[in-house]
Image 1 (cartoon, rainbow, N blue to C red):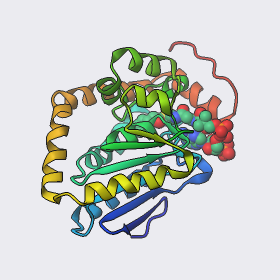
Image 2 (image 1 turned 180 degrees about the vertical axis):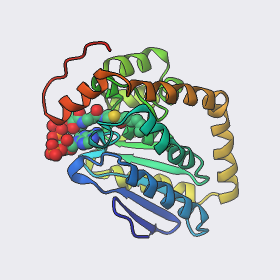
Image 3 (image 1 turned 135 degrees about the horizontal axis):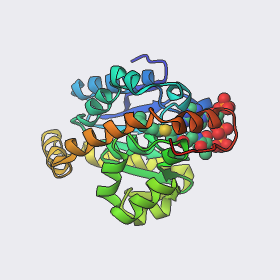
Image 4 (image 1 turned 135 degrees about the vertical axis):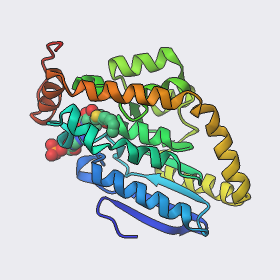
Length: 259
Ligand code: HXC
């Protein structure tokens, strides 16, 4: 499977596929093309009977530092509506096989949302989790306000979303956001270990069990996601979004005005 921004190995280990985000210079920032490739790769792996478990990973420095700010900077709410990028995210969420995120380094914004879309998260000690969108004059748009709150509770979700503070891997573990923290050198090995355990189980039972666990989350979720989406689009009507993203690109502090 050949892609531009991800590397895919359907036979990384027996019954285990690996999807590696591959924009290292941009800290694996998630541009639209990358997410389309991810959607296509996961759909194909879902159809491949040899694959029983999928691992998504980045590199040591970053799982993903969020959606691509440079690509979003000049967008209008109508652009976002037309691009309809969240259709891709909705499809990724519907992957039937279990997906493990193996996270090292930055796991921020859309990157954290992508990890939360996975079923299990294994993190290196150096991993940092956060929803820093607020610092750009916007808010999470790919499930951050909804999934994070369901997982870590209102207090911590509010703190992360309203201040943009990053969590260490240990904090993320304590908060229930992730499954395991391991030394940096073995985060991928640990994900493989878990994938091997899962791959030994009945693929049918695994599929039904995953579907059932997710059902708890789905109740009321779509409504929340729709609400979040409209508000995310609305952010792009503000001067502050333009200022926040421009300041990031120009490597200076933003001056937010509140309109
Ligand atoms: C585009 C990005 C990027 C991003 C980093 N880069 N994050 N480009 N989009 N999200 C680029 C930088 O511009 C830089 O390119 C290179 O990657 C290395 O980043 P540095 O900032 O130089 O690295 P460092 O000083 O180590 O800081 C790392 C960092 C910082 C703390 C992670 O890069 C950062 O704050 N990134 C943005 C994080 C963020 O706000 N994420 C949320 C995005 S909004 P150059 O060319 O200068 O070398 C979002 C919304 C999702 O995710 C909604 C739905 C999809």
